[in-house]
Each structure stands twice: as C-alpha cells, then as structure tokens.
Image (cartoon, rainbow, N blue to C red; front, top):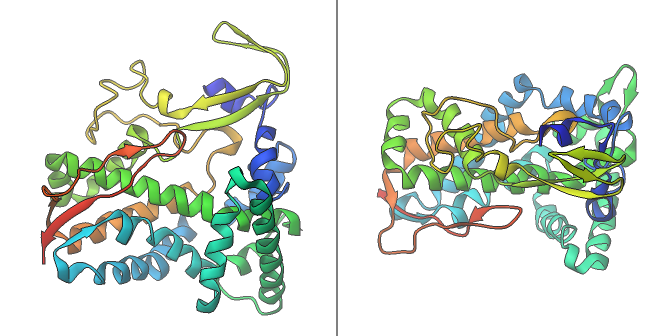
Length: 340
C-alpha cells in the first residue's frame, strides 16, 4: 500500500480522469501527477495550513454548528445524520465561499449532480454550468477581493505564480465532494462509534484532550473513503504479484487501517490504542490537502454535541446506526435522545 501511494515513478492518479476529470475538469489536482500536481498543490497548501484553518473554526464552523443544533435542541431527540452531520459541512462551504443565499439551492443541485457518474451526460452538463458560475464568481472576487475562500485562492501566489483558471475552477467544483461529503461521513462514523462505546464517550466528556485521538481512531476504524485508485505506469511487482503497465489498482485504505500487523485488535474501536498513522487521508504527494480543515470541523462538532446534548444516548426505540457502503462509508441515521 505504501509503495503504491508514494512511488510516483510507477503509479499515477490518471485513473481518475474518466470520472473526476470528466466533471470536475482535467485541472483537478486529484487527476494530475508531478510536476504539475506539486506545482499547483503548493498554493492550496498555503491556504489550508493549520494556522489559517483554525480561524475558520471560530468564524464559520461554530456558528453553523450551533445554528443547526438550535433547531432540534428543544425536542430532546434527533436524527444526528439528517439534522446535523449531513448538513453542517456543506453549510460551512457555503459560508467559506460567501455564496449569496439565493444561489445556495442551485449551487448544491449542480454540485451533487456533477458526481452522478451513472448518468455521465447530465453530470458533465452540471460540471459545465458550475464552471460557468465559478468563472463569474472568480472575476467578481478578483475585482473586489474579500476574506472568503474564492478570494484567497484567486489572489494567492507562490513563487510569483497564481493558480491557472482551469486548476482553480476544477478545485472549486470538487470542494463539495472532497470537503463536504467526506467530513459528513467522518463525523457520522465518529459519533456512531462513540455512542456504541459509551464508556469511551464518557471519558472524552470528562477529558476533552482525548478528542484528537478519538478522531484519528474513528478515521482509522471506518474511514469515510476506504479505497483509492492508482494506475501503473510501468511494469512492476507488488507483494510478489506482477503488475503490468496500464493496470488499475484499488488501494484499500480500509484494509490497511485494520491490518493486525499494524494495529492490535484492529476491528475494535479504541481511542486509547497506541497511536499510529492511518491511511484514511492517503499518503504521498496526494495526501488530502483539506485534512486539517476536516479535523477542525470534526473537533468543533464533537465539542458542540458534548456542550449541548446532555446525557446523550442512542434511542432504544429506533433502529441502531449501521455504517454501510463500499467505497464511501456512512450510517444512514443516528437516532438519539438527550436531556432538553
């Protein structure tokens, strides 16, 4: 696994071009290899550094989280997926982009539509329309820049270079999928694991310094994206198996994250296990550029749950959460009760 993700001389991200490239655009950094990938990734990394991302926690994430919770707090019960985790990462994105309220519905419809690869013609049409929308938005923010993410991306340079429009628009198209969908899934898995292990949840409630290790354990135990695609660009050999050039490889991060050679009792959720790096954010040059923001969002969400949902427990009268999915994992519902 490590070999495939880090050896760029033998393995490429080009396998994503027929899917992600067809709708997000061939400028998507998920489809590029070095040197182009590294050249443009430096600009994204400059903006998504931890010191900048943390400020979004105060100004964007917390207000969104608290606003959503206020709608169900008086009831003493909720479906944390439908009413919270499925919504807040996308609300965060709308605020990061500083989208006009009147545009949010259309934007969300197009962003979701562009990932419908079963209906590729419609997905490509949605991608084209979203590209036109972002092109106009970039022009407006370059003329009158603010502190929103579009303004930052459009006006940030590294070594005298700005992002080309193709790369910038491809990144903005991909934002809903890369930043919103995965964070919603990761937070849902985290809450499911903690509610199914109430002693560990109680330990975190009493000592919140345990939150970072709880997040990393949830990402390891059942990460939101369990496989990553790579293409062999040269004949090679992996684990005693000959791999010809042109072969597609599914790199199963979920399997590596439960490898007993790396993690003792790997199928158990245990926030107190010895810390080792997991594969849920990938490895190598394509390691997730938004991983710091994902951790901030998951952290703020868990703080809000513990601050507001007192005596939180699974609703015994409704179905227990089940984490399902092949490549992307999430429970459909998390029915809970709490003290009003």
